[in-house]
Length: 207
Image 1 (cartoon, rainbow, N blue to C red):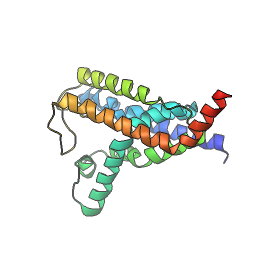
Image 2: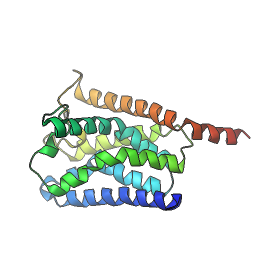
Image 3: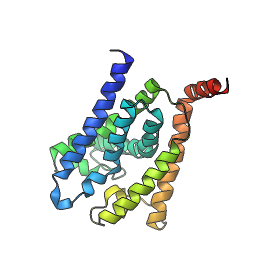
């Protein structure tokens, strides 16, 4: 299979998985639109669109948002899968009784980062300012989530911590500091991973 077909296939996987996730949650009418606003689902769809449009900058902006949370999720998931004990409390919901479709959908946490990074490699990242999209996006998502959801739903953890640890700061400040730090760190990692492609692009622009 050639590169173009691989890119298209990966993009379709993300887009379809994201749309299915949103549709599945739309049927949870008793919770309103809250379940459709999870950052995970939004990023899935945006990554799919970015890959299909060969926009590595857009894909990188989503990886910057979910990268560290997903790494922590995977550590917690596999720890709990092996030891039967919770580590961070991030994946406790997966091991309780619940919708099988919801559990299948949430498994995207496992393949999302590897496939996203592979897609960036195939498409080639040419810019380093993708973090701006990430920051604007999390601000908008926070505001919308706070406006249309409630404390009990705690979508995107905007009301209280979804994990079993905190830093002792006012929670809203803590939420934004945590996300901006994670975006900054992932930006450093992504730029380091793809510095060769970025350097080549800058070299061509100078000619």
